[in-house]
Image: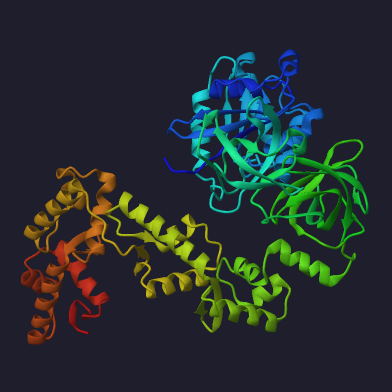
Length: 631
């Protein structure tokens, strides 16, 4: 098992069975507070871990569902790789489920599973109706294409199937960076007698080790790792994606608050002004206005601040724009972090987005240079932005229009990419096509993978047709551009083109059973010369199923061993011999009829006539009345 670590989380309305579900998956009780047990709802974050069918251990975070504990929910959602959206089968999607959905969308949680829980309380007909209703209501959300798993957490029904679905989804998850600087938002702080201060959280990046020097930010409180636990087991180190409990040396509990961050000293910026790409939710009933006071949620922290809009008078529901948040307290943040905004009063989620950086200054509104800088921060360095834009072959005219820059500016950036060997250029007739080298290499690797898989599954077909390959790769280019790009790749020997088919460079091993059947056909055709038998009936005597016969014949034609003429298949060497005999006869006699052709070929009229017409088509002969002459 590799070193990648993942975190599974729950979301959903209060009392829909999130805690019970985690107990069924892990065997661990996550409600730890007396008040939680008495009231039957989660108030604080709960943590557990489970073993997937492949043996991988993953962490689980149970977040509160009640509307008054949304802050804790957002703290738990930070760092999740897969979210289980728990919906009670007897109630369906409730208001808090909807708010959780919006928060997960704003936080950019990439993958999820809809868990239809409490199936033991309803019948099959109701379940079908509920699943249809849930699927309809999840349209245009991050869960619109998510799988739905039916379970009864209380009885254990469907739990194993859910484990397998989680394992399958995690195969697509990109692991967090364990080699970079350490960053762990703190979600719990407590003291253990004889040990001192302990903090817990999910490592977003880096690897923590015993004895390592770290800082608590904001505040620059320096500390050392005294001891370390993962899933209640002492360890020497913990990597990105893992839940960790860290015993800190030289720090009092009163010095640390939930919402602060344990980080590598001097790496991340801390500030009170953040540049933002901001979205006002479609479901929000009000616009976000200039200087509006909001609750700003980032990781495990909540801070009050005011919105400073940069490119709009106000941000209407469903609109996006650039802004700054002017916070009342400093926060540690990095470009790319996701955040959530809630109204100050009444408290409800209104929007969120992406942090573009920590700023030293409050920027002027509606200033074009400021907006341009925000765009670059949002989309990256100008060269990175261009490289991202040419993830598919594009001409200069298209790029100028999409990027809204001058032709000279575009050419300057393209030249820079070319000098850095980050660009491929090819000709589409007289027009240059530009393609990011990285994207082109990934695309060709995918192409070769698709063709290679096809060749392994269909060894008789000698490659995949160009049109079928285009469909499988989801190509939307014009056919002319598709053929141009395909042929350029073949010229550079990334793969081979053979007529209408695309082939990999490596030879596909023919399975023994197929190889024997081909040899049986070859041996039979050696004996029949220019009077081949019916292919289907003959092939069936060698154990070849009727529906597979065309594949065997096509393989022998594609390899150049056979030639298909009208209804018959001939050996290519027999056709070549027939052509030689025909031309020799015509050189001596000047013309030939069907009767003479039958005689020199030793065949019947049934075969002689199609053969003569074949040689007419090949312009070996020319028909004049009932006779043929050399063309």
